[in-house]
Amino acid sequence: MRPEALIDPVKKWVTLGAALAVLSACGFVEFGAKPTAPPQTPAGLTLTPVKFTDLPGWTGDHHARALPAILKSCSRIGKMPMNKSWGPGGVAGLAADWRKPCAGALRVQPGNDAAARYYIESTFDAFLAAAGNTPDGLFTGYYEAELTGAGKPSGRYRVPIYAPPADLKAVKERSNGRYKSRGEIVGGALQNKGLELMWVDDPVDAFFLHIQGSGRVAMTDGRVVRIGYAGDNGHKYVSIGRELIARGTIPREKLSMQSIRAWITNNPVRGDNLMAQNPRYIFFRELPGKEGPIGAEGVALTPERSLAIDKKFVPLGVPLWLTTIDPLNPNKAFNRLMVTQDTGSAIVGAVRGDIFFGFGDEAARRAGNMKAKGRYYLLLPKKTPIPIS
Image (cartoon, rainbow, N blue to C red; front, side, top):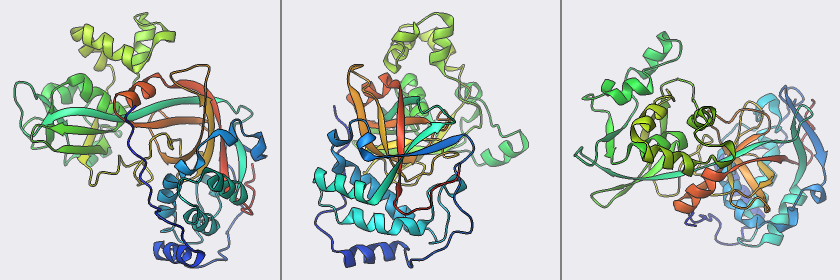
């Protein structure tokens, strides 16, 4: 496995005074903010209080590895007004409720799993999330794609990666939220408009880049360029995997990203037609820095610690306990402390998640095989008003 190394922003113990100074600089300026109304769980989401001893596999995780992701989310929460309700229905309370938890995260010694676990248990309450009365949901995976590209087109590098067109918003506004389809764009509708960020050498890689939403491109000049989501054409995502199952081409139990890719590679003409069944098209932008792809929360994602969720039900930036099945071993549990830091067009529902696995061949393999039922437990600060269902 070659996942991106965890980037630890904490290099030493931080005193309470220093921690509060950091949070104040981020925008946390006062305690005592008052909610205007009691928090409510969004319709369709049920939260049931549980004890940490009830969480499957709770003591078996490396909890300290999730702290960098928690601190990244704290950097965003700290910029909110103190009296701002957080999440749909204010389910996560107020930004003020997260001041002490964020200060506490700064005081945990890096790499100390016992201290990190104690911090979580003493700072948060756990709630089993359910869609109505159903706590089980679907969990899948995604990764940061790796491609090979060039700054100019050639016989090898012939697949363009486009930036958003200038008329994207205007056309979508007058066309029921839709721009040109994938088929039209691949057919040349945006050629010679100066929108090409780069050209890559494999149309299948480019297709999966669109599904993942971000990627690393190794350029012929030696640079490695990170690109990420910058817009879309407004068309609904259509799963080509479901299409292959419907055709009887690949049995459901053998479907994975790897099996789909292999079929397309072995059947290039039919593979092109299959990819065209998905009319959704993604536009990209070059990302600054080297820390990782940026999720919907606006922070760099952490491999196997960042989770994409449906923000109509669950707030971005909230830690949670995920329990599901390892993608490469059906007899092994995948129990992790994670943070909700991204969204996705196919991630819909009160109990639905997409695990970010990082980049590299192993990350792609784990993401491509990740499809299992599971549960998650939201972690909300102690003394936060209990959401009203």
